[in-house]
Image 1 (cartoon, rainbow over the protein chains, first blue to last red):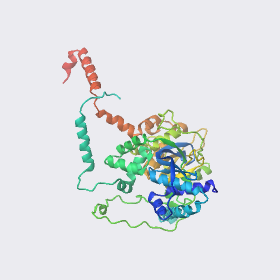
Image 2: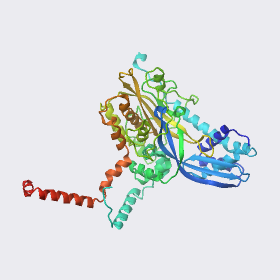
Image 3: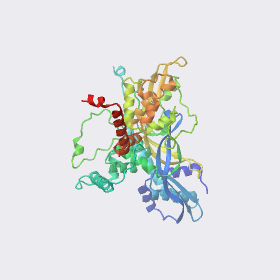
Image 4: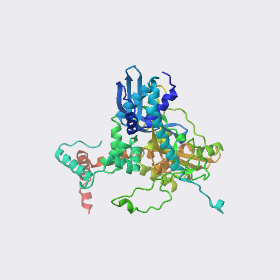
Length: 148
Length: 364
């Protein structure tokens, strides 16, 4: 297995941001998923969100968020994990299976190409569109002194 | 609770609930509202319920709004009750609002803000006129929002940083202390800033709005300016113990407000600005602003200001901000208090009889 923690963090983040529909669209076009065994969950619970006073000071508890987690193992013994905001059990299970497949050198390239890169591209485009919409509302305020 | 349980009435109660369900559905000829419609088209109501229910889950908040017939306090109550059925997996890293993917970011104090002023989706600068087109049977879809090439995403500097750098405002620092959690421990007085901020973040918007407004009208005035409001998506990061490294579990929309307030200075400190902070789930901008005003007012004690106004009274604010506790205590008055009241009746009758008949005679 050759992957860095930051690589794994990236694919887990991409999976966390993807909707079930987007995931299924990628998976429908890919080869079938191998059999897996559930080690835990999928189960829904809460994580406490935190903020910081004035964004940089003391931490405070803001509110909770629903989270669904799942752990699975593949036939070779690789264990995959997922923690996703929301209550979608199917999504968490698919993300855990993909996390396991992406840790295996033999299966990683195919799943990166079939799932992670297309999802990352969708997410990048969504963010870019939000940024373009925000840019269209950029405003230049002028005080009377400068307009005189 | 100051009332004694009563027996009976089961059939009447079941029928009353049945009637309420019929009311909730309304005219069956009108199509039923889906929770997806609530989620998508009543988004600010969803945001408010999540903030006051202190639980981020858009689908659950939408369901609660539908079930509560649009009574947002009841909806927040339903969400709070539901969260008690779930286990807690842990706590997230503090939201990094510096890395927010901003949709809106404005300042009322610096017009040439590095990174620019982005109005985002806002009602500011519009006339509040009813739009009858929305009432038409076939509503035309709005024009897609305009797009122009935007700057690459990056960290946006904070207005507060400029003032801090000039020495005109105190630098906030993370003491690294574990914050108290109001969902597990009752409030303790004097409260820490962390406890206050948690309380305000889930407090009733109307209550905080009124308190904030009262400070502007002179009850603990501290002359506020909106230093900065930013609204957008932030990543939620969590370290699962079984992994041992931080992962992103999703992204949520939040609104942050930093107020800049005047401070006269004291014997030990030169004149400087102070600040109040608001952070809420969703697009609750009015709530974030109100929270920042009240947060600043509650700093009166530590800034050596006289605590004369309600908004500066920590115990008053924190003990009355929660609309779920408030509604529980106010509305419980409707439930049977027969035994309680019977004893009051007896006491009053006894007092009157021992006071003699003259008192009775003088009554008109």
